[in-house]
Image (cartoon, rainbow, N blue to C red; front, top):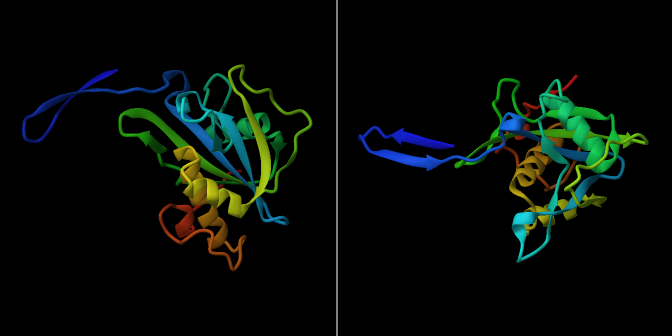
Length: 198
């Protein structure tokens, strides 16, 4: 869409704004943590815009909120976990306050996302199917591998933000003890304000 903005000094500037209206401009991202093994799930996913430099990037289970299929963002997150990681259940935490509109994907994009944390899910024998255009693999990895992907420029930015908030929440709530993985602050999870999804 085209948007005309008038600044306080009287200037008028036209912007092109992009987004996905069929998903109500919203998507979800899920960080999976396994307590006993102190590990997480990372995807390796084909990213069409990454070519020609590379074909795939690290990511987390991610997908659009579809009001035709999902009653809530939490339900969308559970569906993506089933489809992309073949997991279900677990303890769920939304890493934003209930009234938050979602993290803006980019300043020129209307899309927003909600980051979730899922602790100790189990395999889903009746997992959902991937979308036709998706090409990805899921792997359980140590937390250090998550940090390497985050800090090495090899991960999509919504996933980086979700990892950061999830690791901060885990440390704040003593699910990860004596670990330098996540400095406090910087997101709601880091300030101990994650909200459990029922």
